[in-house]
Amino acid sequence: MKYLIIADIHSNLEAFEAVLEDAQNHGGFGHTWCLGDVVGYGPDPVACIKLLKQLDPVCVCGNHDSAAVGKIDVGDFSSEAARANRWTAGQLSAEDREFLSGLPDLLVEDDFTIVHGSPRQPVWEYISHSFTAADNFRYFATRFCLVGHTHVPFLFEHDGAEVSGSVLRDGDVLVMGDNRLIINPGSVGQPRDREPRASYLIFDADEMMLRNYRVTYDVTATQEKMERADLPDFLVSRIAWGI
Ligand code: ZN
Image 1 (cartoon, rainbow, N blue to C red):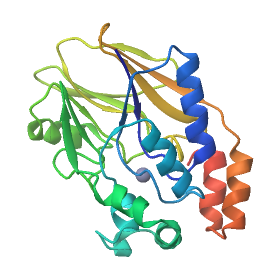
Image 2 (cartoon, protein in one colour; image 1 turned 180 degrees about the horizontal axis):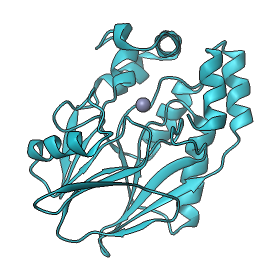
Image 3 (cartoon, rainbow, N blue to C red; image 1 turned 90 degrees about the vertical axis):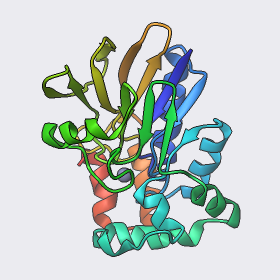
C-alpha cells in the first residue's frame, strides 16, 4: 500500500493539483496523510478543502487552520500571515469551518504519529534543529513521527544514541530500518528551502520506503489570483523564490 504524505498546502490549488497528478504519474497512492495548514497564505482555501476531502484523508490541524476558524488568535502571526488569515476566514462556508474545526491536533496511524508542528506541541512548535528533534523523540511512542510546519523537507534520525538531521531532496529514497525517525515532507503550497517546486512524500508500506518528490506548478497563475484577492505582496513574491 502506498501513502501520499503532504503538508502545508496553504490554499495553493495549482500546487496541490500538480502534486496529485505527479503522484499518480509515479504509481499512485491508496491513502492520503495530510499534516495540516490546508489553508492560509494562498488564494484558494475553499477549493483546496474540497479537493482534499475528495481524497478522504487522515488529516491533522495546523496553526493556520485553527486561526481561520477562530480557535487560536492571529496575534502570534506575522502581519502578512494575519492579514491573509482574516481574508481566508471570510471565504469559508459553514461546511468548510466544520471540516477545519473537526481536525485533531494529533493522530496515530500504525507506526506513525502524525502532527503539524511537533509531538510535544502539535500545533505550534517548529522542529528545525537536531536538538529540538532530540527532545521531541521522547514525546511519541511510535517508531516514526510525521511533522510539517517548517515548510522544509527534512529527516531526523535517532540511532538509539544520537540524533542526526538531513535535508531531503527531489528523488531521495529512504529505506526505513530500525532507527526512529521524524520526517517532514516539505510544503505543497509554500516551500521555504529556496526551491519553489511543490514538495511531497510517497511512503511504500510494503517496501518500507519513503521517497521525496518535487514538482513544478503554475506559480504565476497562483500569484495572479493572490493579487486579485489583494493578498500581501510578500506572500505573492515568496512562492516564486521558495522562501
Ligand atoms: Zn504552514
